[in-house]
Length: 396
Image 1 (cartoon, rainbow, N blue to C red):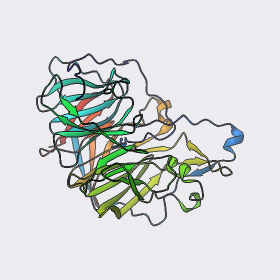
Image 2: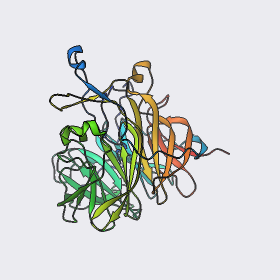
Image 3: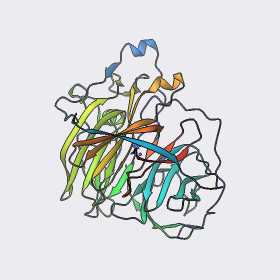
């Protein structure tokens, strides 16, 4: 059992921090990226001589399925969550998941690694996930994820230890969760269990071109699946370069039988279903992909263009739909005082890949949850404030 952590420990924050410039993909956050999950790649800088030799890529794979134009627009209005006299200080939120009545927020700018918030009360429970080298400590959490079909469990991926832990909410406010001993999963970024006991993961910078890796219940690699929609002219480059440029996070349906691949630095997604011990493509779409740059001679990946469109920044899902938070800004809009990693449009697809509707939010946000049974969608915004938890409801 993990060692106890103080439930109401103070959270540090840098209130004067400005948006950092990242000229390559944060894997999501999607959430996306979820990475909806995030690992920031180095800022891309190049001399004029190198720039002259670069190839710029902005097109999608020919024949990719486009979204429907007949979707409905739903206006959503926001309300700040009232925590009474509790002050919640969130530093740099990287992902958020809803598990039952709790929000779990991954934060790489606090003493510990994530926050737990009870939204039913509402009440801030505290920060957890002690950093350190001890047996119950974490080294580098890059993922908090829900467990398909479970309202009392969540997963934690510690990449430095190559371990994925299953955690159970305990109801004890001073120690609100317990965790198991974990399973070793190598080469994983985004991870979720599946209905057949296997695990699915996606990652960039790997030596195979496919999106997904499936693992056995014992953590052994069992195969690779999924087309990254890399344009044909660039499939000649090494897989490690292709997968660095075209990264995906994932969403898994509550039944553990349907998986969505969510493009980073793109408005693109693929929809898959579990088929035995493999994943079978149902449909995919690609409206655009970021302007990626490669060295045409060596095939090395060099980053994205500074004026690249940001695309999908986070995602969420429920039994019926996949929700994609889509930014309309570009990377270098931060130079104009804007926040590229924020958005006010959520595109909603069913698990077959059909676009059903689009939410228009009255505030720009960074992270979202799927709407609950009452139609309430939670989000984190930093528009005109420090990172703050808000909720959205359909406008009357």
